[in-house]
Image 1 (cartoon, one colour):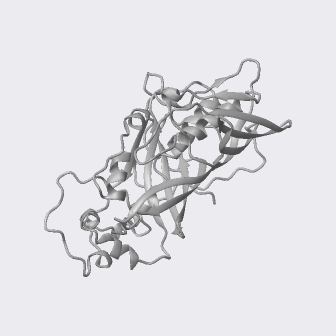
Image 2 (cartoon, one colour):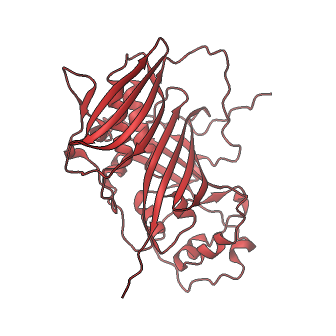
Image 3 (tube, helix red, strand yellow):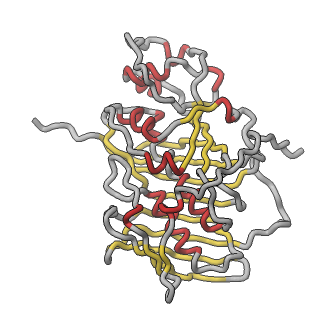
Length: 359
């Protein structure tokens, strides 16, 4: 028997203004050569602690650069990206698209991004004519325990940076705050013996404690003092003694603000930028470390299962598979308000510790 699909939340109407994210993802395609597109450095987004252009923005622009070379009846169904070298936010990115193959139902493209003659990013993309009456149809259902939208709390990248690095340095997220809305699950009020046993309670709590977007497979046993342990530095000990057999899962909702053009290229590009916003930081959030210096993306893969509009709320299940050897891997699944699985993303991150002083 097929799983009965459950509505995530009532349909949320779109805002009546153009999406702010458009100026970050747009590229200028050469009139005489559609295989060449160029970014505008004025709209490059540089996150705090980063020396390079935001990776999600580069992915989004690469999608639009490739989309300009295929027939508009094609929809992107997969993209595999690799970040090769650091980028200079003050310099334009030049995207060169190679038409690997164009068939009746599949078109393949290779996109290389350059700054001057230096290769900084590359991606392989595949486009497909979506079949409205497929011979097979199956989709993984939204987890029965997924929390509804009204139980979630707003969160932004500033909260993430406070929780990860614990040094009060906040991310200047004005660009992303205008472009995206995101909400995360707050812990329940139940205390577990696993997290509380032997851990000292801090003498006082910060008055402005950011949301702690942590959940697990045993959500009914979540600890209300997680934020306290995080602030006191004791959460590291709790996580270190936790069972590695239970995957760490983070539940969230995300949507793009405003209205996007009515085409699959801009919708896929906007979603790609959004998918990179709260992902590579997750392993560090789950296991906070005062010695963590920075985190960056190594590669990013997205599978688009069917066309969808990211201007409506998407339910996101983030699963941290591993964080070891200086790298981390996160899987993200996205469902619409109708309970349809529309995209899956995988991201590998690189993290580094602070260098100890030699003095």
